[in-house]
Length: 446
Image 1 (tube, helix red, strand yellow):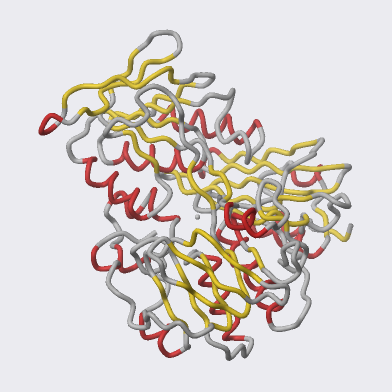
Image 2 (cartoon, helix red, strand yellow):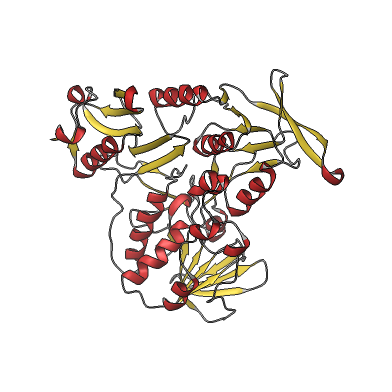
């Protein structure tokens, strides 16, 4: 989800060139950031903006310069944007700001002292001494463990190499099966259909995007996608992938057999069933881990010195009014940016709590979904359909207070709810039910 999810790319030889600041220096860096992700990049940028002057090493395990991920399932897949446009910063930026960019190094072990300093070791044998450590290691795609899962043509879409592999196959494929009706699956399915492919989406659950939106929004997307010709099958799962001889004798995927015995033709199977946070290094360090690396409101891990940010971090729920002790792991670009800013304050000796309104987005063909807040625990919804303009919003309430909104092609509704949540104000449900009433005009003090 361009977003969620967020739940968070570059992808060509042009973006994989050596960074101008890449070195093999054994000197102790002021801060080692493991993970050249959105949050890792933002942390380095925020630290420089705050006046942090020590040397920074930004280390990634991909052989690419740091890049944006949301476009991978949409514009990059469709070929409407090139790889260079997804790069976060130029080599000159890193050199000018004393940031050493290290690519294609996978850290397998870290030795750390009580003061926060230590040494990280990579699979290549390189050592990276540091004074402070930041883990911005993100999450990895969940694998579908069924027969045929290792066949040529069974793909995932999490990073630049995944996107390149998918793009390389699209031209020769006519039938695509997407497993998973979440944001990534629906974004990719919409893109592939637009490219002329016959696309079937299989969702194990009873509705689309079940983790992120309510029933009304899920039903809206289901009907809209089916009207566009997407074959979406709910409460459906794959039993195995069937094979056929491919190029040069390779065994490639040919179809997907469902639990009821139906076989769907597929030259590409794209699996998008969620992600798992990368906690291996945190576990090796003895940090607290629970659906992510456990951090406090200042992005500090349980050792009090390491910061962990973004998709990999489990934090206290930052939404005002959350239950005491409630924790959450957010997968979104916005969270990666805002959480990195909080961590930057911590690393410079300040304490600024993470207290913001989560928001997300997902572009699926002509449908632009924007989500403000979190709808967990709602007890009332208000629908604002505007079929003439192709807009739809649903507001979520708990005890009469607005707590979230899903807005499709309705940016003004999104901004009104987002601002109301940030300011601790309310949008009365009765007045909001009239879709012709601008929400910003009926916002009240709680």
